[in-house]
Length: 176
Image (cartoon, rainbow, N blue to C red; front, top):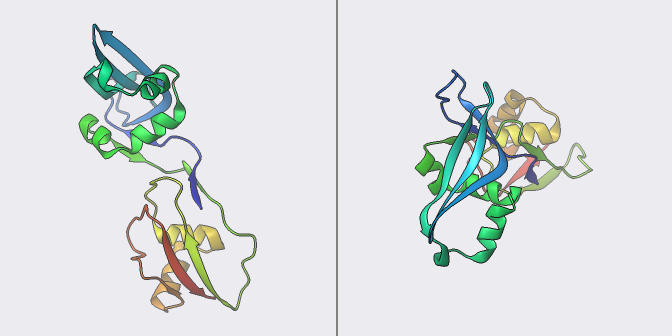
């Protein structure tokens, strides 16, 4: 199981310093204009600490929003921040990308016996884009080049493509 450990870094150019990374800490700012609401997710620059507002809601009518969403915004819900950062519409609107490096953990099964054929299922708790060869390498204590060698030798076989990045569940067969 691939699970997130923290919020990913937000990749966006800082207008104050040359840094291009921001840390979202799960804090929201909500502003009301009579019956209209604006909401932003706050992110701090990793270089200078300057704040950037990532637009979540813009001039939305109060009655069109679920009360639960408003409560989560006012309560600075970190799980809502994670959900919104993974939303492609929010990322596109704010022209940002995410860097998941160091923000996920791989939980593997306890037994990794050698010399047998194993069918392994990889599940994602969130949409975290990771290279399957990196997951297999980390899960079995191998190097990425060693995993790529096993793939070319057909000792690791999968119906899913193992090159590139994946963020959806897949299975593979390992003959070790």
